[in-house]
Length: 281
Image (cartoon, rainbow, N blue to C red; front, side, top):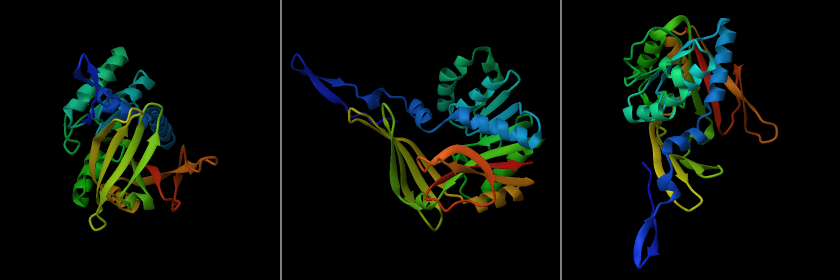
């Protein structure tokens, strides 16, 4: 997990290790502070489902749920909302129970964490399935991704909607690092390798701190860089009736994304973009 470069200080002639900021930091907290905004994500899902189906969703399944931060935000929204969180990593789920579910009080009874494979998990039919933070890119083979999409289709209610995200642009194909400074740390997105023949890529997240310490390889992802036409085609082949790309608008002052996603038939040839995808059963 964290790489701990320890400084030393002399105490009565002996050297005593001094804990660095990296050694004291929690990688999950850093991730959620720098990568996730579950409030905005749930706002989009809630509003878009209501627009598409003229009703409010109640039952959600969060695939690749990790710490279940999103599932917890979902049940906070309404007393009738329930969520299933599915992930193979039991350690991360236990972290989520301790740091997120425990803070929900009685509402935690409406979150069910399942330590299972998203390819096989069985629950009651749900209104919404989520596969966010590009997590489904772990399926590098078209047949395997299609199998996952078909399984999601089967698990949805008759008017259910599957929400995903994706990123791309010319920067997505580069081996590069991008740094974003926050108050107490710097987030480093590392596109460590990319193979243009297979579209296989390795991405990593590192964190650095004001005291000079670093948390290297806090997270490592081995993915295939899927394109939007490929994702759309496989979703339709899996049985979804309509697939909509929600393109992010631009902030006029910063020339970056403004957090507002609207249906789009055409996108911009930007160096980097992130979209939501809605697949309707």
